[in-house]
Length: 113
Length: 116
Image 1: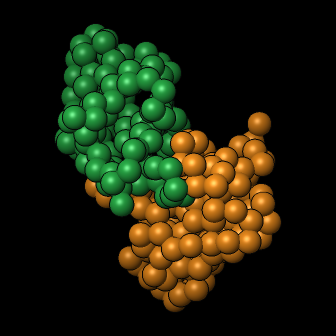
Image 2: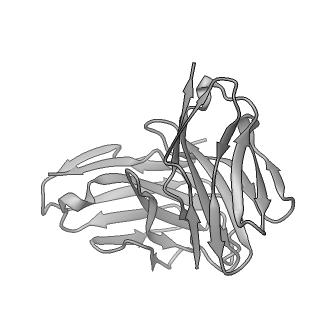
């Protein structure tokens, strides 16, 4: 079985500051990991995914995430926050042999001017 | 490109009424999903369909039924709506094949349902 924990339901950063959104996973088999972004009144859009090819994954809009097996983590980072990054971010886990995608509870990012 | 289309976008029901949420995808994906999103609880899987002709329960299936009408369409039915089913419902699809699990989900824009 898989599960995901996102630490911090709300994160605030200043414009231009580092963005760090935390995700820890639990999986009995090698996981596939995803980050999605949701803007108000919209569906979720894929930011990036880890499927075992490389531990450092680059996504859209300048985001990246690093898979750390020893820490069971897949934290999302962006070097410099922009006002347009304000949204809710979800981490999700899946695995080979399952059709299920399990989501975390989300982190709402606020960017301060 | 339409992607995943959900109808309706908004719905208000009274307790005990029934309704069907419609979902269609034009990406030739094998797998389709229904999630509900509630504040502070993330997305919870209601039902999924690994392929045409199959459906399976997710985390929170009680009070819902689904139909995989064909490869494109996957509907969610509330037979007797309850206030606890007030939520935002998302349909998603994926080209997941044979349980590979490594293809991302593609989401519709959601249906906002209020049950009074």
